[in-house]
Length: 76
Image 1 (tube, rainbow, N blue to C red):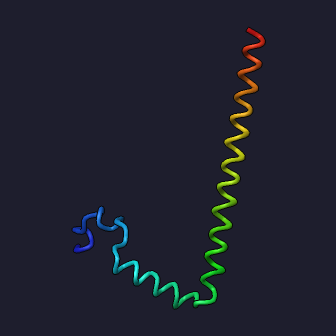
Image 2 (spheres, rainbow, N blue to C red; image 1 turned 45 degrees about the horizontal axis):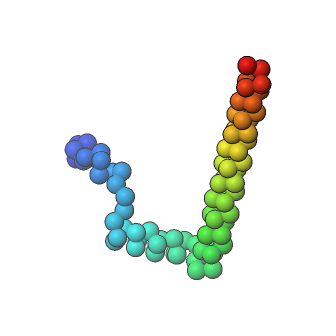
Image 3 (cartoon, helix red, strand yellow; image 1 turned 90 degrees about the horizontal axis):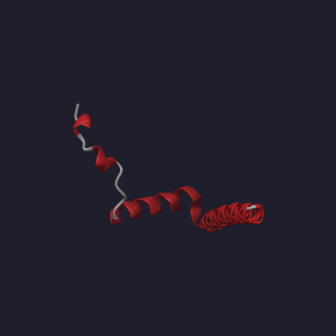
């Protein structure tokens, strides 16, 4: 019954300084010092690819909107 009395907002809060330290230590222990740069490079590459895809879709939508706008202006 004690679990039900915990404020749900506390369960979703961001980690504080001491908790981040434990997270970093756990990552170092699990992955080792040599794997961390490779892991960071992979995460960076994934973020870069996501942003490129997002920008590509945005540009495609904007170009199609401009085409539709020019078609409607020439027909009117």
